[in-house]
Image (tube, rainbow over all chains, first blue to last red; front, side, top):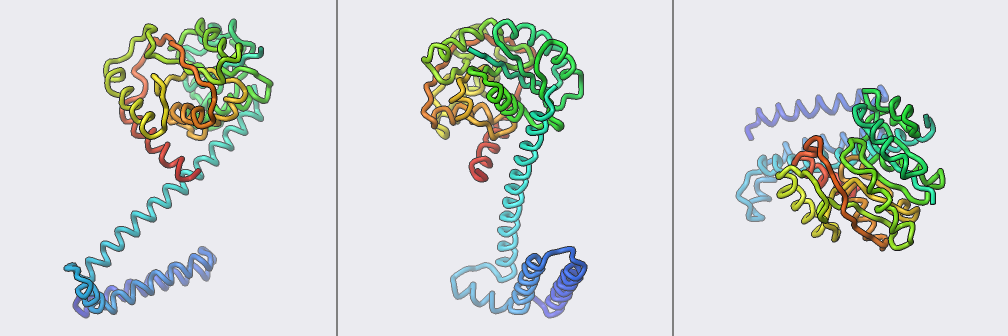
Length: 110
Length: 220
């Protein structure tokens, strides 16, 4: 990845880090959530800075894909996982909603 | 014996009064669970002499049946019958469905549309959707019954408690059958008559059922 692209990627990451800090300051996100985002964006920054090292590491392990492709696949897997978790938490909420609706029906018999 | 009939209903204003009138001679209590209909289902059911429980938001047939079961159990019902609100079943068959429970020969009786009684099954349903659903139930849920999706069934108190419905939409049919086998209940299947007035669930609903059963397993 040329230096310019790396610089742009780092600027974007800094913007997101700044945004997370502002949200934390305004109490829009919890301390735990802030720490999670902080860790995520710092890891992303490290991956961008040491992209060549990742290339070398993958080659040493016998993979033909480049570091940036590896990060991309990793991102897709992470997204699938997040969507799955989201689906499960929605299902739990849906179940709780059903229980409330049922209780209201039982309490208001006509 | 106190027999209660639970009828889940969503926008069934056209049929509900007739269904209640048909059912009432055979049961002590008729419970209509109105799943937030936008028509006059609840008012018509009340006027026809049923106890009406109304969901404030639409939650699906499985949720409505469980609401009805909870109410019937709380009221001391000894036999609970599930019966559809769209006039597709014959109320005259209720005594035959409840007799094995009253005689203590079964805990739960499932109606079956595949045991010889007259049905006007749409061919797609008879030859594709139902065999696939039956195969799925047999392979993945260990259910050995001839009808995977019949909504006409009867429970004693033990069975109604052991088969609590968690799937709020269409997966409840398979869920009830699966729970009945798992709880070691005495299960019986009897032929029932079905007269379809509309096609009912499409093939896509089958995939929804599989998805719901899977998610339910994960978040259990």
